[in-house]
Length: 408
Ligand code: GDP
Ligand code: IMO
Ligand code: MG
Image 1 (cartoon, protein in one colour):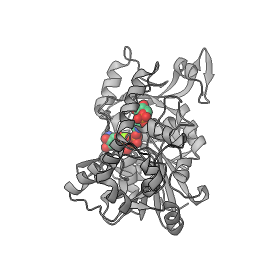
Image 2: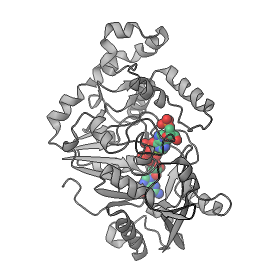
Image 3: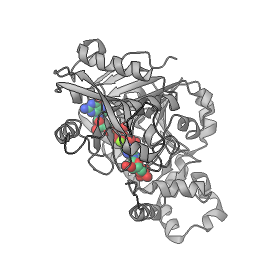
Image 4: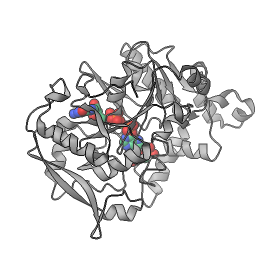
């Protein structure tokens, strides 16, 4: 059976933690989008790992992982990450493979990405990892795929500086390269987990364009970005936080107001440790945006939601979530495409009573206080999507599963 895990907000929802949790019963994990712009955190027995390109299943001995066709691979960063794993006693040799259709990030692309964003009238606030430049080279049909590395005529045209950059990685890249389409077809009836990066609202097509990343972070990316047909995907999980965060620029209708909600913002940022894994930037924080979440459920066919960071609200007297936007006096519940409309949108908030107790050490969903369950019930009703998994802390075991994962 094949299960997709994608972000249902603006990234950093806790995908790494959830993929690691679900990977227990998967044989393979395939990352399908983005590159070194992602930062996926996994905590096992109090030890923290930050992964950027290597799929989050790697921490389980014996699991095979794939870097999919939809990814953009930065060889320098990838081998540094693999060395970090070796240094921590994780034996990855022979179980990390890269799609022959994945594109390569050259060092000049990182500089181009930074320069281009700095020169924009309305900067996106990219991670500066060369992501947009690599995906645009791909769309221009000028990119270099792993499959092209031994295409002599093509490689002859590559700049000498780039050839020198690639040289020390060449042998290792070739040894990890696979025909992912053939592999996916072969293993399609086993348990495969598809790991998204970024999130629904950062997707190039469904996100808040142009304030998005450049890859397919929506559920459809699991198919195009790994080489398996869409009908071979059985279940789609959308991960979201009990509140909202965003890194970089672009509209965020429920962002806490620095003047009137500064204290709440500081509280959530500090309690939730809302600082980027890749860039260290403080994340923008806000109320849970149910208008955006329902949109994410619809456009990605999300079967089941995964609620994370519920524990961050443990000490709150009262919680609020956005159930509509007020745009020029009109109540809107369909997520707008227009950036000026999103910039004008004021959140219409609904209040919920807090639970005022620590939920971090509970061991199952039924033990949650009734007010926490009422918040979950409301989210399910509003989005029309069940909340199948709830996370109450960063550790693997701080997770409550409410359904059979590997069953349709
Ligand atoms: P990803 O990019 O979606 O994998 O998420 P990140 O790793 O960038 O950010 C999520 C952060 O929240 C990490 O520091 C996780 O360790 C942490 N985390 C994950 N789930 C929970 C949770 O339920 N509660 C709390 N307090 N932290 C969590
Ligand atoms: P994970 O997988 C949060 C954001 C950047 C910027 C925009 C474009 O950890 O959830 P890019 O460098 O991709 O061209 O930047 O997208 N961004 C992310 N924000 N989590 C991520 O990944 C992100 N990957 C990109 O901050 O606003
Ligand atoms: Mg992240």
